[in-house]
Image (cartoon, rainbow, N blue to C red):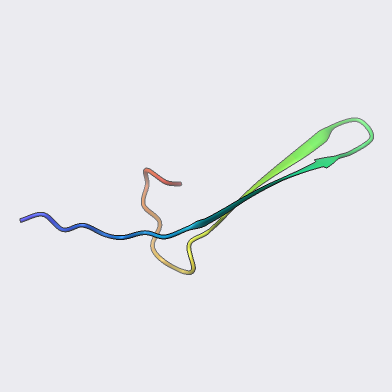
Length: 40
């Protein structure tokens, strides 16, 4: 027997330029669901 779990996630990227570097944010929102290792 196989069980399938549906995981929905919102994903956002934001790049913030600084004086000497650039910071890239990668934000995942799984709405409190347990995260699947292949997504995280």
